[in-house]
Figure 1 (cartoon, protein in one colour):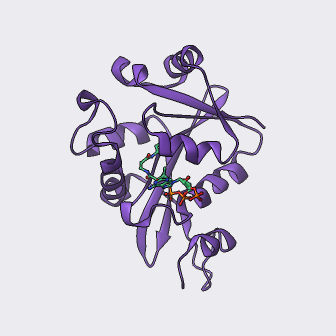
Figure 2 (cartoon, rainbow, N blue to C red; figure 1 turned 90 degrees about the vertical axis):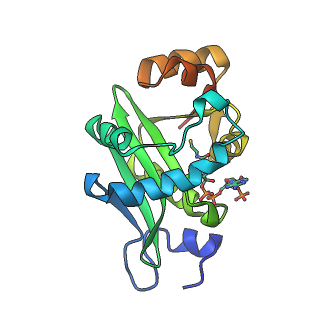
Length: 181
Ligand SMILES: CC(C)(COP(=O)(O)OP(=O)(O)OC[C@H]1O[C@@H](n2cnc3c(N)ncnc32)[C@H](O)[C@@H]1OP(=O)(O)O)[C@@H](O)C(=O)NCCC(=O)NCCS
């Protein structure tokens, strides 16, 4: 299969052999998920504050905690290899997009878009929020392309404190975007 942006969108959930490309991943897939997260997170190095960066960016313990907090991880398979992940967390009256990562070598080829569209299909009537680093301009652009609107700093902080369980330092340097439906 030729892998490019249009093929990823046309065959959004199935490739030409009808093998499902987007699937839910569980605790037993931790090492594959972490491989994607920690490779893609290299984009943050030197972009976010030094004291917010660590290597690996996400540990197995942290990922297991996310599963415990009912984050559901979905992944995109290409040539039998997990190349992108996106987590969704239903919390109170909203759905949060958590941990969206595409392997560095596959970024910009439509995979993240395919996962996001999968989310839109799955949570059609939900209020969708996504938090990201304020300095991750590429990620903000990515969500804005899909109609997400950036909240002001004050509202972002309120939302991060209400719906996320992240350190104060991360709240200080993050923003929230919301999809108006
Ligand atoms: C943000 C991310 C998940 C998007 O996934 P992706 O598979 O690259 O997404 P797509 O290929 O569908 O790209 C869609 C848009 O995202 C933007 N984008 C994606 N990757 C980019 C990159 N490496 N550099 C600049 N822009 C990029 C572009 O605006 C692109 O728009 P285009 O279609 O006009 O080119 C992925 O780039 C990534 O893992 N980045 C590093 C980690 C990160 O920032 N995660 C977001 C956490 S909220």
